[in-house]
Image (tube, rainbow, N blue to C red; front, side):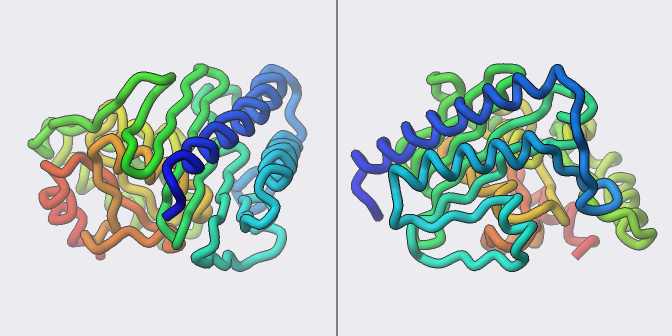
Length: 270
């Protein structure tokens, strides 16, 4: 593991990059968007691309030996190869559909893995001006103030965040609606905010008690948020209850008190 002083340097660099990209997002948020389709409902805008270029050029200048994985570059080149090398994993604009519709749940997500472990995380929502940060072993913060996961211990009193993923084939949709139908009877209510990274930050600051993400884009959606959740005293794990795999496109998160009950509620879908 790198020394703590360099970890705080890494964090400062990531915050700087996220704020620069945030200005571009804020600027584009109120203008006409030029939208392309990656899939049926998976969108990409010129803002996504501009932000990724900006973030990578900023970080590559500072850390030329580090590896880089980004949503737009990986979308173009296919497979994600995560090694033990320090690797910056970036979603330049998580919540592109929200961005296109002018719905303010959008963010920049920057995570740094070292030895494949998420170690530094920055998630910045420039529309609501919320900056979530975390460093392995150093706690999690929202706009500089410490945050912690909820202390809710009852599933029935919990607020669950989830999403519908990007596929629209019948079997995926049926599985999704069946899951929501079943979970709705076990929790207080369900929210779909359209940003995996902000859902994780919602767990970290106690806005949400439970989060389930299936079939999202890739590690860039979770690399930043995963550090922030664990540093806030929350847990990030596979929906089966097994260890979290950053490359699996499956994630669950909660406080430690309701993990077992949540995994049990999800067991019928495994």
